[in-house]
Amino acid sequence: MSTAEAAEASMAAARDKYRSFLQDKAEQIQWRHGKPPTYDTVNQLFEEGRTKEWPKGSLEETVQNAIKSWEMELTHKTRLQDFKSINPDKFKLIVNGREGLSAEETLKAGSYNALLKNSLPEEFKFYKAEEESFESSHEAFRSAFPRGFAWEVLSVYSGPPLIAFKFRHWGFFEGPFKGHAPTGEKVEFCGLGTLKVDESLRAEDVEIYYDPAELFGGLLKGSSIEDSTAAQGCPFSKKT
Image (cartoon, rainbow, N blue to C red):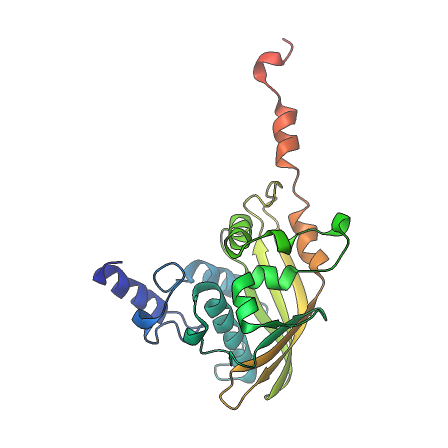
């Protein structure tokens, strides 16, 4: 990456008002794609679709931005030593009561695989996290949600060190997902979480509870792309 490209990326990152640490010594960080990410498109989706606009400096805004910053680091940084939103030595992610994942395990799996892994029988699995890599999982959801997958805090029930909150996740199904054609409809789900932080407000324990069926109900609503193609058939085989 050239000096000009690095400067442009740093300026774009510095403009992000929801995710801290993007501009902090960006040139010294090992970024997954070579430079800091930009969130202009999903920020627009967030601002147009959010149901709450929290006062600046409020506990709700602080929690919301902390989770966004953690997601940014998990998705775009490749070394735990570059993370500022978590305590790598103590961090654990627990989803729907499953066995917790360490910081290293979460980073290796990626956010989608970590959140979507489940122990359902094979015939009932909407998404098989164990068969997906970090890259393939993110590509699948980037394809389905070209404008991004926005996230907001709906309520905060307690302050640090053990923060309890309710959240909402949403996006528009405008690209194919795992063989299903896009519907253009909004797909969303809500959930609950707890966030245990240390004295520096770095996350040590994160617990998330939600119903994956709310997400996949919208994504699997699209018709099968293979079926749609077959239905069109070969034009030369149609009767005249």
